[in-house]
Each structure stands twice: as C-alpha cells, then as structure tokens.
Length: 124
Image (cartoon, rainbow, N blue to C red; front, side, top):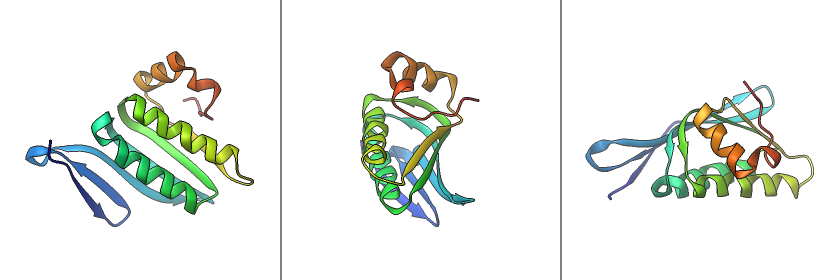
C-alpha cells in the first residue's frame, strides 16, 4: 500500500491509496501541557508514524497529554509506542504523560493487555 505523510501547521495526516486518510494527529498547548490529539485507527501499517510523532514530541516537552478520543482501534505496535513513551517518562525526572478520552474499544484493549496498570489513564 502506498502511504504518504502530509504535515500542515501543527498536524500530521497519514494518507493511503486513493487519498484515504488513515491516521491524523494534531499538537496543541493547553496550560503547561503539550497535547497530541489522535484520530483514526492506529493499525500496524501506520503505527511507525504514530511512534515517530509521539516519541519526538515527548523528547521536546515535560508534560504530555495524549488525547485518544478519535482513536477507534489500536494495534500491538501502537501499544508498544505507548509503552516505550511511558518507559521514557518513568526513566526521567520531571516528565509526565497521561492519556485521556479513551474510547470503550481502546479501553477494552488496555484492560485485556494489562496496560491500565502501566499507563496513566484519565477515566471519562
């Protein structure tokens, strides 16, 4: 599958064939936190883009909020990205990361994989 990455202002759009949007994330500032809002399905085919965006952002900020309100599915590679990000936070002084607005589908994956015990998730 042909995939392209489009960067506009503070947003990244991952496009598939026939200009189909596969994944999108935008970055904003709220109070002292940096917020990454993710939309779409974090499937294996686009997980590397999610990984790149989240981890590079985590290296630039001390207070990161990951808004998953628009995420309908997360593959194991997406989970691995969140785990890697949490390990960076845990190994550093002064960094924090929380996940907000998790859909029921994604929360179910977090529950079945034990990620509720590893990640800081703000319940709805």
